[in-house]
Length: 92
Image (cartoon, rainbow, N blue to C red; front, side, top):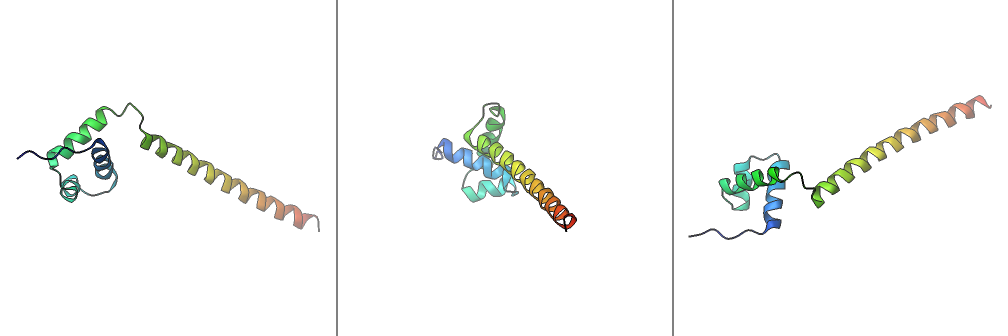
């Protein structure tokens, strides 16, 4: 009996889970109800075609950039708070 065809979206999500969940690939395959060899093949295919950016990777890159910018802004705010306190005490 042939296994059911999986949509590209299902495969992409399975690959993402396998690579980011921290679970073993065998566990992910079992949880998703797919064969271990199928999941491994999807991962290999995804890694071979990694040169083309995906919406997910673009979003991950943007999120990393925003987190970096947020951290920088927080650090700058702390410096400005300390400078304000310093000059307020000095002007007394």
